[in-house]
Image (cartoon, rainbow, N blue to C red; front, side):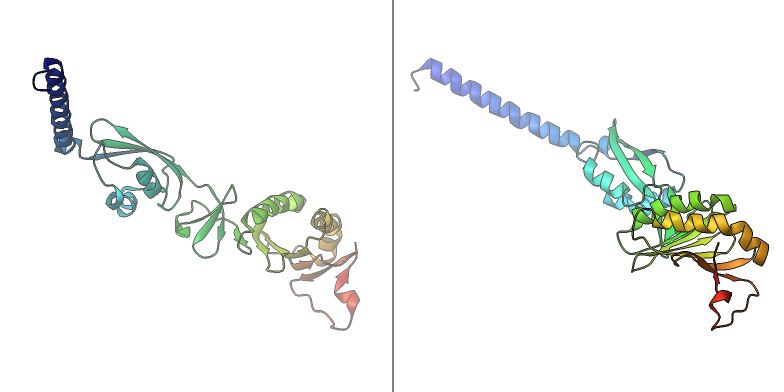
Length: 253
């Protein structure tokens, strides 16, 4: 081998290439560690109505590791999506030492429990309910029923609109019976949904009979039970029932 100039040249070239790789790797490592590329700036835009600097500092800054080249963008995105109100985040690098973050917030439709909201898409998310921009309806239901409750809320809006009222509270019981409280203070029991038209039919029964109800009992109706097959029961302010008299309890349209 030592007498073969061609082999010696090949070995020399290989050693030079290996040395060049080592030098470049060392230079690259040195470059990566320069303070110039340490992350110094977060550029945040998008839907940030409920996001502020203290919130970002408390939830994200301690979870961002590395510099411009080494920061884990997926990890950074996940950290931003843990911030209350944030539904989605996208993160990208901005040369030479910044991250640009675009946030999308949840749009709350109603409250769920004591510390959660339901979004317009039927998603439950945790946030401080005192930060809501307006007074929201109250939703209650078994775990996993959020989308059903939201769908029924929109139905109740439509069904009771002829009465000039809106849903204020919508409750789905553990037995999957529906109750709605309206903005005039009236609570309406609709019961379980045994077929797709049952609830709509019961609500329509009340709407049709409403002029007669208010003419007889006034507008201050506290409670309506629509679970009867062909009628409904009401309770008005100041009304007193005779316990054994079904005619005092039930009104047929």
